[in-house]
Length: 421
Image (tube, rainbow, N blue to C red; front, side, top):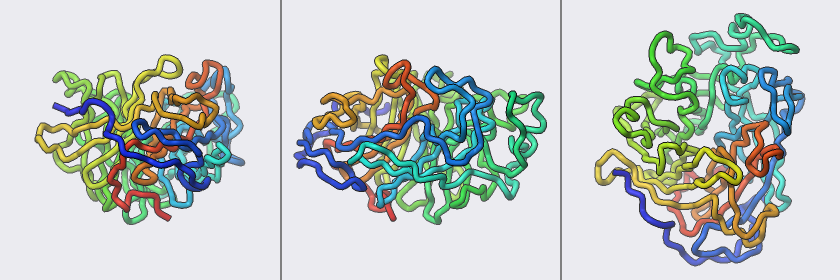
């Protein structure tokens, strides 16, 4: 059985927080030693677009808050992040507008942002790179080289781009990202689900790496085979070991075989070295089969953080939690152990950061980014699912919020997993 210890981690005494805007917080307030405390908050407006980029959203209608098509490429949809010591973050956007069929004009990208908790604003610092396949490692047509020209029809106002091999949300749905010891990037995605290996400019270094025995309905090689993983249930989280060589991709949903065996709340965690899946996997048991994975990162050689969430938002949201997870499986039952660390629906906010009350809640549908800043501070961000509404109000476009949370207990972080220069 998966072991869930009752209650939050034991508390230790903490002191007031006062760090610079490039540091972890500016809140001049007592941190409650028994509760995680919000010590920094900033937001990026929903309508943030890559400057001078191509219009998008031709296959969507938008929302009441933001009508489509859009004047550029939205920066939205943060599904993975990587923190640097200078206070900036790389953020990876997902496939665009929620599905393969409506995201062909969304260019897969990694951006750089800089949250400033002193001003409560997040600055967009620019496009870091687009994902691309100039060396033609992908053995099937991609949208910007074969896919578009073969389409039966195109929406009004849209024309096929030049075959530049830039990847789009029609090709892949990236949901997780890690930087390896050699400086190359690894992306976990959901259409395959695949692992994508790129250089530091987003260019594929090898063909997409398939998951042994797992396929989704969007897998481009599926043919007449029956998929065993639902759409959008691929690699939402992917941790990397402190040595920068071992990846731990984690499925967001249970595969059909596990569901048939009564294990609908179980998520598989694989181990990958040098692009090869090792035999077997560990299991993470969610508190409910209706829950989903938000993110998964390592803390040290055997502990990790997992965001587990319900699929609700706004006033209906109930369950948005971060767990401390032990991968050692000391009782050898095949399951990791999990301990509640932060309830994102009950965060102490003595300074009323963001204009919210003394109890801060994070009621977004998807919360998909967690990063460790030091042994007692984490950063959390949401995927705003642009142009969605509902997190902070039915007629309010969801923004990307950035949180810095002071934990109620120190976690044992490996130095290599802290923000580096």
